Length: 294
Image 1 (cartoon, rainbow, N blue to C red):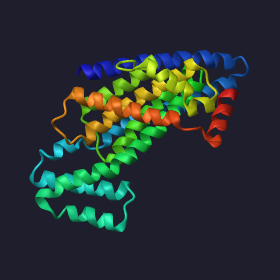
Image 2: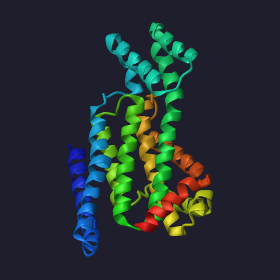
Image 3: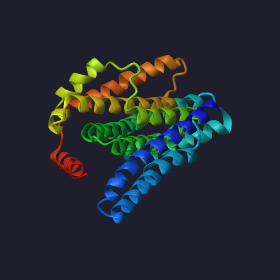
Image 4: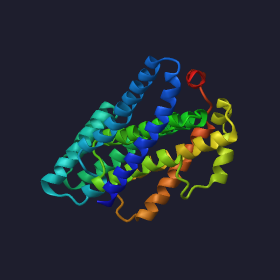
């Protein structure tokens, strides 16, 4: 109940903040021409509905499940979720014909079906999830490091993070329980409003990583902006790894504290890889042009 109250409160605060900033920009555009101001408000509405509301609501249509619960299921429930895992693999992951037959064969193993499917599912799905997380975090770093406008930052952060949660549930084929989803959404809104959750983060480690990495140098951004982008990217990665661990954690021995530590270590490792990467000109130039025009 408190999760829902906090979630709704944060939505209201976020909506008021975005509206306030949008109105401020809209009024400046209105001094040029009223049509430009109206077009701007329409664009903001489209971005909010398509980039935030749709992915936010869309997650709740996925069935609730996790690999941890598969061990507790038995009988028809166990068979049902084993078939779902097999179907998710066949639909969402590029498998060779031999691997497809292997997955189908797991369903005939009876007592060993769940263990075999969980191991195979985790091994094949994890790279797909990591790729989505990597791409999203890289976009967030670029947008929030280059953009100096709060509306762009807030809309970009919220849209990217809500869409990432939706993609994680689509790839897995199921979602965390309602309480866990609300906690994830609260984290997303906190990231959006506070521009970076500094909990358990070593900022001294992020500064040289952001400013001296190949990506930061390629974008030609200053230390403060690079660090802010790195902080936002890291908080996104932490949120995503927590969501992934909610779903893929089949080890019931891990405590919540251990899962949080695991998520931070994994998020930091991915961020280091992002910072080491150079910036392809096909991506760098359009991004620079977009913000220079804005």
